[in-house]
Length: 267
Image (cartoon, rainbow, N blue to C red; front, side, top):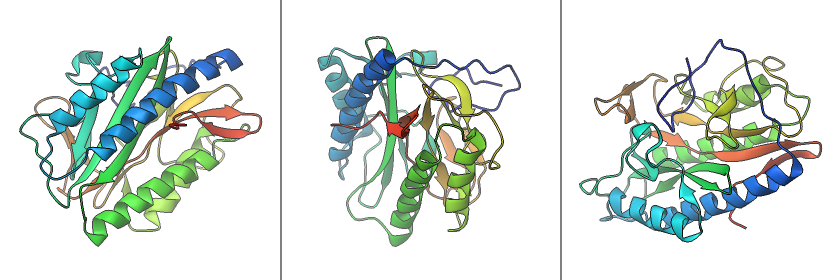
């Protein structure tokens, strides 16, 4: 079923898929939203330092987005209480920023940000090191980041959703990591969550065909250990089942006749 919580990375559904193809004007609007979201993410990443609280980073994100005349997409969406999801170490997604969550040397910090501007959403995420991190943590981040770009490269008109998921899955599993199955990527546009669902696993040549004008959030969520996750009592914070590290990278991508175009770039 489709999740009712935000940010929520979509769960698989059997309902009929309703895909909205974007016009060139709409793609331009999404590029503007993506630029704001990307710059907010860059600003947040620069603030990741030992001794800083995730609440401080979230406050900075909200201020920046609103100063650009945009709206923090996550804030209040499905009841989520912040402008960004900030997930530390074994938190996979949907970490709630807090004054008592103080970053430490060696943490890895996944920050997920959405900005709505002129009716369209830009959605992106990145995992940042807090100071010097372990070799194991850096390797996980590197693999997850590269898996994102493997997935993006497969987002070509005429390919299928399964080609994206397969590209991500093959890359990380070959390096000994596991793909989170409970949450997946999604279409994005006037709404933060649109069709189709975009799993980070799959079979080449299977699933929805990619058409010019489709806009999707490709977002590998990759665990150091097992693929299983669990959601805590707050209803949001999702952690690895074995307590090991997780990393999360995301871009909003447009499918075009000339290949995939990343809409969440700062410049």
